[in-house]
Image (spheres, each protein chain N blue to C red):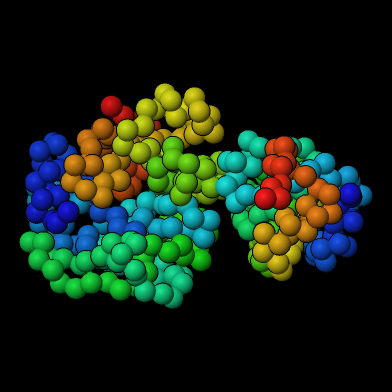
Length: 121
Length: 223
Protein backbone atom coordinates (compact mmCIF):
# COMPACT_ATOMS: atom_id res chain seq x y z
CA UNK A 1 0.00 0.00 0.00
CA UNK A 2 1.16 3.54 -0.71
CA UNK A 3 0.59 6.59 1.49
CA UNK A 4 -1.85 7.87 -1.15
CA UNK A 5 -3.94 4.73 -0.90
CA UNK A 6 -4.02 4.99 2.90
CA UNK A 7 -5.17 8.61 2.58
CA UNK A 8 -8.03 7.57 0.29
CA UNK A 9 -8.99 4.48 2.25
CA UNK A 10 -9.18 6.22 5.61
CA UNK A 11 -10.28 9.65 4.39
CA UNK A 12 -7.20 11.32 5.86
CA UNK A 13 -6.31 14.97 5.44
CA UNK A 14 -2.79 15.75 4.22
CA UNK A 15 -1.35 18.44 6.51
CA UNK A 16 2.27 18.38 5.35
CA UNK A 17 4.63 16.62 2.96
CA UNK A 18 4.34 15.71 -0.71
CA UNK A 19 5.80 12.25 -1.19
CA UNK A 20 2.48 10.40 -1.17
CA UNK A 21 3.46 7.72 -3.66
CA UNK A 22 5.79 6.11 -1.22
CA UNK A 23 5.20 2.51 -0.23
CA UNK A 24 4.24 1.85 3.39
CA UNK A 25 6.49 -0.89 4.77
CA UNK A 26 4.59 -1.48 8.00
CA UNK A 27 2.88 0.28 10.90
CA UNK A 28 3.47 1.34 14.47
CA UNK A 29 1.20 3.01 17.03
CA UNK A 30 2.30 4.72 20.25
CA UNK A 31 2.23 8.12 21.91
CA UNK A 32 5.56 7.52 23.64
CA UNK A 33 8.15 8.98 21.30
CA UNK A 34 10.97 7.09 23.00
CA UNK A 35 9.22 3.82 22.04
CA UNK A 36 8.67 5.02 18.49
CA UNK A 37 12.35 5.92 18.17
CA UNK A 38 13.29 2.44 19.37
CA UNK A 39 10.73 0.41 17.44
CA UNK A 40 9.29 2.06 14.34
CA UNK A 41 11.07 1.24 11.10
CA UNK A 42 11.96 3.19 7.98
CA UNK A 43 8.98 3.48 5.66
CA UNK A 44 6.45 2.76 8.42
CA UNK A 45 3.21 4.64 8.95
CA UNK A 46 3.03 5.87 12.58
CA UNK A 47 -0.29 6.43 14.32
CA UNK A 48 -0.30 8.81 17.30
CA UNK A 49 -2.29 11.34 19.26
CA UNK A 50 0.79 13.46 19.93
CA UNK A 51 1.09 16.61 17.86
CA UNK A 52 4.25 18.07 19.37
CA UNK A 53 7.06 19.35 17.11
CA UNK A 54 9.18 16.36 18.19
CA UNK A 55 6.78 14.10 16.28
CA UNK A 56 8.07 15.58 13.02
CA UNK A 57 11.68 15.26 14.17
CA UNK A 58 11.12 11.56 14.89
CA UNK A 59 9.42 11.09 11.51
CA UNK A 60 12.41 12.66 9.81
CA UNK A 61 14.96 10.78 11.92
CA UNK A 62 13.41 7.38 11.11
CA UNK A 63 12.48 8.32 7.55
CA UNK A 64 8.88 7.22 8.11
CA UNK A 65 6.47 7.06 5.18
CA UNK A 66 3.83 9.05 7.06
CA UNK A 67 2.56 10.11 10.47
CA UNK A 68 -1.17 9.97 11.19
CA UNK A 69 -2.20 12.33 14.00
CA UNK A 70 -5.54 11.12 15.32
CA UNK A 71 -8.71 12.48 16.95
CA UNK A 72 -8.58 15.60 14.81
CA UNK A 73 -5.64 17.01 16.75
CA UNK A 74 -3.62 19.38 14.59
CA UNK A 75 0.05 20.17 15.01
CA UNK A 76 0.72 23.90 15.12
CA UNK A 77 1.77 25.95 12.11
CA UNK A 78 5.52 25.90 12.86
CA UNK A 79 5.51 22.14 13.27
CA UNK A 80 3.77 21.64 9.93
CA UNK A 81 6.10 24.12 8.24
CA UNK A 82 9.06 22.14 9.55
CA UNK A 83 7.47 18.91 8.30
CA UNK A 84 7.14 20.42 4.82
CA UNK A 85 10.73 21.59 4.96
CA UNK A 86 11.97 18.15 5.98
CA UNK A 87 9.67 16.24 3.65
CA UNK A 88 7.79 14.51 6.45
CA UNK A 89 4.25 13.51 5.52
CA UNK A 90 1.77 14.45 8.26
CA UNK A 91 -1.80 13.22 7.93
CA UNK A 92 -4.81 13.89 10.12
CA UNK A 93 -7.70 11.64 11.06
CA UNK A 94 -10.85 12.51 12.96
CA UNK A 95 -10.93 8.93 14.23
CA UNK A 96 -9.01 7.67 17.25
CA UNK A 97 -5.75 5.71 17.12
CA UNK A 98 -7.52 2.37 17.71
CA UNK A 99 -9.77 2.79 14.69
CA UNK A 100 -6.97 4.09 12.42
CA UNK A 101 -4.62 1.24 13.33
CA UNK A 102 -7.46 -1.26 12.90
CA UNK A 103 -8.32 0.01 9.41
CA UNK A 104 -4.67 -0.07 8.37
CA UNK A 105 -4.33 -3.61 9.70
CA UNK A 106 -7.43 -4.69 7.78
CA UNK A 107 -5.85 -3.22 4.68
CA UNK A 108 -2.84 -5.47 5.14
CA UNK A 109 -0.37 -3.20 6.95
CA UNK A 110 1.48 -5.11 9.64
CA UNK A 111 3.65 -4.17 12.59
CA UNK A 112 7.20 -5.40 13.04
CA UNK A 113 6.24 -7.95 15.69
CA UNK A 114 5.07 -11.38 14.55
CA UNK A 115 1.29 -11.77 14.64
CA UNK A 116 -0.18 -13.64 17.56
CA UNK A 117 -2.10 -16.68 16.34
CA UNK A 118 -5.81 -15.99 16.68
CA UNK A 119 -7.55 -18.34 19.04
CA UNK A 120 -10.71 -19.88 17.68
CA UNK A 121 -11.57 -21.57 20.98
CA UNK B 1 3.80 15.00 54.98
CA UNK B 2 2.92 18.13 56.93
CA UNK B 3 4.95 21.36 56.93
CA UNK B 4 6.69 21.04 60.35
CA UNK B 5 7.78 17.47 59.58
CA UNK B 6 9.02 18.42 56.12
CA UNK B 7 11.10 21.20 57.66
CA UNK B 8 12.41 18.91 60.40
CA UNK B 9 13.38 16.22 57.90
CA UNK B 10 15.06 18.79 55.65
CA UNK B 11 17.17 19.95 58.63
CA UNK B 12 18.08 16.36 59.52
CA UNK B 13 19.27 15.85 55.96
CA UNK B 14 21.27 19.06 56.08
CA UNK B 15 19.22 20.62 53.28
CA UNK B 16 19.34 24.37 52.90
CA UNK B 17 16.95 24.68 49.95
CA UNK B 18 13.85 22.65 49.16
CA UNK B 19 11.02 23.17 46.67
CA UNK B 20 7.37 22.39 47.28
CA UNK B 21 5.77 21.36 44.01
CA UNK B 22 2.38 19.68 44.24
CA UNK B 23 0.79 18.25 41.09
CA UNK B 24 -0.80 21.11 39.17
CA UNK B 25 -1.08 23.15 42.39
CA UNK B 26 0.93 25.42 44.70
CA UNK B 27 -1.57 25.55 47.54
CA UNK B 28 0.69 24.11 50.25
CA UNK B 29 3.89 25.99 49.42
CA UNK B 30 3.14 29.06 51.59
CA UNK B 31 2.51 26.87 54.65
CA UNK B 32 5.87 25.11 54.28
CA UNK B 33 7.59 28.48 53.79
CA UNK B 34 5.99 29.75 56.98
CA UNK B 35 6.93 26.61 58.91
CA UNK B 36 10.53 26.94 57.72
CA UNK B 37 10.91 30.57 58.72
CA UNK B 38 14.52 31.70 58.16
CA UNK B 39 15.99 28.25 58.74
CA UNK B 40 15.51 26.92 55.24
CA UNK B 41 14.75 28.35 51.81
CA UNK B 42 11.50 26.98 50.43
CA UNK B 43 11.04 27.65 46.72
CA UNK B 44 7.37 27.67 45.79
CA UNK B 45 6.39 25.87 42.63
CA UNK B 46 4.28 23.28 40.90
CA UNK B 47 4.75 20.01 39.08
CA UNK B 48 2.70 20.69 35.97
CA UNK B 49 1.52 17.91 33.69
CA UNK B 50 1.56 19.04 30.07
CA UNK B 51 -0.79 17.86 27.33
CA UNK B 52 1.89 15.36 26.29
CA UNK B 53 1.66 13.98 29.87
CA UNK B 54 5.15 15.25 30.60
CA UNK B 55 5.82 16.29 34.20
CA UNK B 56 7.54 19.66 34.52
CA UNK B 57 8.88 21.05 37.80
CA UNK B 58 8.23 24.78 37.74
CA UNK B 59 10.12 26.80 40.34
CA UNK B 60 9.81 30.38 41.52
CA UNK B 61 11.23 32.73 44.12
CA UNK B 62 7.86 34.10 45.23
CA UNK B 63 4.51 32.57 46.09
CA UNK B 64 2.70 35.19 44.00
CA UNK B 65 4.47 33.92 40.84
CA UNK B 66 3.53 30.34 41.61
CA UNK B 67 -0.05 31.44 42.28
CA UNK B 68 -0.18 33.08 38.87
CA UNK B 69 1.02 29.90 37.21
CA UNK B 70 -1.60 27.95 39.12
CA UNK B 71 -4.27 30.25 37.76
CA UNK B 72 -3.06 29.69 34.18
CA UNK B 73 -2.79 25.93 34.69
CA UNK B 74 -6.24 25.63 36.25
CA UNK B 75 -7.77 27.45 33.27
CA UNK B 76 -6.23 24.67 31.16
CA UNK B 77 -7.30 21.73 33.33
CA UNK B 78 -10.16 19.57 32.16
CA UNK B 79 -13.25 19.81 34.36
CA UNK B 80 -13.75 17.00 36.82
CA UNK B 81 -13.50 16.24 40.51
CA UNK B 82 -10.78 14.35 42.30
CA UNK B 83 -11.48 10.72 43.15
CA UNK B 84 -9.80 10.22 46.53
CA UNK B 85 -9.93 6.46 46.22
CA UNK B 86 -7.68 6.55 43.15
CA UNK B 87 -5.60 9.66 43.57
CA UNK B 88 -5.64 10.32 47.33
CA UNK B 89 -7.00 13.32 49.19
CA UNK B 90 -5.85 16.80 48.15
CA UNK B 91 -5.55 18.53 51.51
CA UNK B 92 -4.56 22.12 52.00
CA UNK B 93 -2.96 22.67 55.40
CA UNK B 94 -1.56 25.53 57.46
CA UNK B 95 2.02 25.90 58.72
CA UNK B 96 1.34 23.63 61.71
CA UNK B 97 -0.14 20.96 59.47
CA UNK B 98 -3.68 21.66 60.60
CA UNK B 99 -6.34 20.91 58.02
CA UNK B 100 -7.70 23.93 56.19
CA UNK B 101 -9.70 22.44 53.35
CA UNK B 102 -9.79 19.84 50.60
CA UNK B 103 -9.18 20.84 46.99
CA UNK B 104 -11.79 18.98 44.94
CA UNK B 105 -10.53 19.90 41.47
CA UNK B 106 -8.98 16.96 39.62
CA UNK B 107 -5.30 17.89 39.96
CA UNK B 108 -3.87 14.64 38.60
CA UNK B 109 -5.17 15.36 35.10
CA UNK B 110 -3.04 16.63 32.24
CA UNK B 111 -3.50 20.28 31.32
CA UNK B 112 -4.17 21.28 27.73
CA UNK B 113 -0.90 23.28 27.72
CA UNK B 114 2.02 21.89 25.74
CA UNK B 115 5.47 21.63 27.31
CA UNK B 116 6.43 24.65 25.24
CA UNK B 117 3.39 26.61 26.53
CA UNK B 118 4.25 25.78 30.14
CA UNK B 119 7.89 26.79 29.69
CA UNK B 120 6.89 30.06 28.06
CA UNK B 121 4.40 30.93 30.81
CA UNK B 122 6.83 30.05 33.62
CA UNK B 123 9.61 32.03 31.96
CA UNK B 124 7.30 34.99 31.56
CA UNK B 125 6.56 34.88 35.28
CA UNK B 126 10.27 34.84 36.16
CA UNK B 127 10.49 31.16 37.03
CA UNK B 128 12.43 28.19 35.67
CA UNK B 129 11.41 24.77 34.40
CA UNK B 130 13.17 21.50 35.11
CA UNK B 131 11.91 18.37 33.35
CA UNK B 132 10.93 15.91 36.10
CA UNK B 133 12.28 12.37 36.55
CA UNK B 134 13.50 12.04 32.96
CA UNK B 135 14.98 8.62 33.71
CA UNK B 136 11.51 7.12 34.14
CA UNK B 137 9.63 5.31 31.37
CA UNK B 138 6.49 7.46 31.74
CA UNK B 139 5.50 11.06 32.51
CA UNK B 140 8.98 12.07 31.43
CA UNK B 141 10.04 14.56 28.78
CA UNK B 142 12.51 12.03 27.38
CA UNK B 143 10.16 9.01 27.44
CA UNK B 144 7.14 10.89 26.10
CA UNK B 145 8.79 13.21 23.60
CA UNK B 146 12.00 11.29 22.89
CA UNK B 147 14.42 14.16 23.48
CA UNK B 148 14.47 17.78 24.63
CA UNK B 149 12.46 19.75 22.03
CA UNK B 150 14.37 22.34 20.04
CA UNK B 151 13.98 25.84 21.44
CA UNK B 152 12.40 24.76 24.71
CA UNK B 153 13.18 27.18 27.56
CA UNK B 154 14.39 24.50 29.92
CA UNK B 155 16.77 25.06 32.83
CA UNK B 156 17.75 21.42 33.19
CA UNK B 157 16.74 17.84 33.81
CA UNK B 158 15.72 16.14 37.02
CA UNK B 159 16.57 12.53 37.82
CA UNK B 160 14.61 10.38 40.22
CA UNK B 161 16.03 9.79 43.64
CA UNK B 162 17.82 6.48 43.09
CA UNK B 163 19.08 7.28 39.59
CA UNK B 164 22.74 6.93 38.76
CA UNK B 165 24.00 9.76 36.59
CA UNK B 166 26.32 7.45 34.65
CA UNK B 167 23.62 4.86 34.00
CA UNK B 168 21.14 7.50 32.82
CA UNK B 169 23.63 9.15 30.45
CA UNK B 170 24.60 5.76 29.02
CA UNK B 171 21.00 4.64 28.50
CA UNK B 172 19.70 8.05 27.39
CA UNK B 173 22.50 9.80 25.49
CA UNK B 174 20.07 12.57 24.55
CA UNK B 175 20.34 13.78 28.17
CA UNK B 176 24.10 14.36 27.92
CA UNK B 177 25.03 18.03 27.99
CA UNK B 178 22.03 19.10 30.06
CA UNK B 179 22.50 20.23 33.65
CA UNK B 180 20.93 17.77 36.04
CA UNK B 181 19.64 17.57 39.58
CA UNK B 182 18.52 14.55 41.55
CA UNK B 183 15.44 15.23 43.62
CA UNK B 184 13.44 13.15 46.01
CA UNK B 185 10.16 13.77 44.17
CA UNK B 186 9.11 13.06 47.73
CA UNK B 187 5.51 12.06 48.28
CA UNK B 188 6.57 10.79 51.73
CA UNK B 189 9.07 12.11 54.28
CA UNK B 190 11.37 9.13 53.86
CA UNK B 191 11.66 9.90 50.15
CA UNK B 192 13.36 13.25 50.75
CA UNK B 193 17.00 13.18 49.63
CA UNK B 194 20.09 15.35 49.81
CA UNK B 195 21.94 14.13 46.73
CA UNK B 196 22.18 17.47 44.96
CA UNK B 197 24.70 20.09 46.01
CA UNK B 198 24.45 23.57 44.53
CA UNK B 199 27.30 26.03 44.44
CA UNK B 200 25.44 29.33 44.22
CA UNK B 201 25.60 32.86 45.60
CA UNK B 202 22.08 32.74 46.99
CA UNK B 203 19.15 30.33 46.92
CA UNK B 204 17.22 31.82 43.99
CA UNK B 205 15.90 30.27 40.79
CA UNK B 206 18.19 32.50 38.71
CA UNK B 207 21.21 31.12 40.57
CA UNK B 208 19.90 27.57 40.19
CA UNK B 209 19.56 28.15 36.45
CA UNK B 210 23.18 29.38 36.31
CA UNK B 211 24.34 26.38 38.31
CA UNK B 212 22.54 24.00 35.92
CA UNK B 213 24.39 25.65 33.03
CA UNK B 214 27.66 25.62 35.03
CA UNK B 215 28.04 29.33 34.36
CA UNK B 216 29.74 32.15 36.28
CA UNK B 217 31.35 29.76 38.73
CA UNK B 218 28.02 28.26 39.80
CA UNK B 219 27.62 24.53 39.56
CA UNK B 220 25.62 21.48 40.52
CA UNK B 221 27.15 18.39 41.99
CA UNK B 222 25.25 15.13 42.21
CA UNK B 223 26.22 12.70 44.88
